[in-house]
Image 1 (cartoon, rainbow, N blue to C red):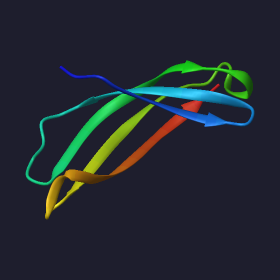
Image 2 (image 1 turned 180 degrees about the horizontal axis):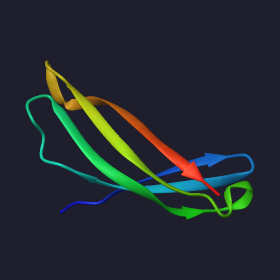
Image 3 (image 1 turned 45 degrees about the horizontal axis):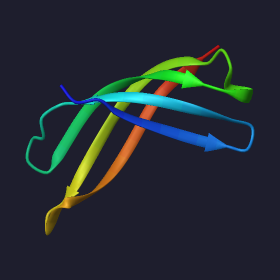
Image 4 (image 1 turned 90 degrees about the vertical axis):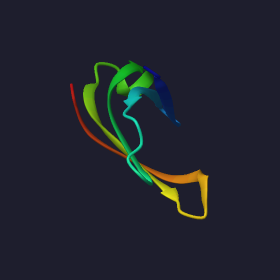
Length: 73
C-alpha cells in the first residue's frame, strides 16, 4: 500500500491530506484519503475525501488529479 501526502499551503495555515491510491484501471486511478495535519486558521478541521487521476493517453507519466471531500470543525 502506498500513501501520498498532499499539503495545501495558504497565507493563514496549512492542510495536509493523506491518500491511499487504488491500482489504476486503464487511464484512471482513484483513491480515498483523510486530513492528517492542519495548522493556523485550519486548527480543528477534520475530514475525508476522494482522489481521481486521469492519465494522459499519449504519456501515462502525466495526469490531471482532482481531489474532492468534506471537512468539519
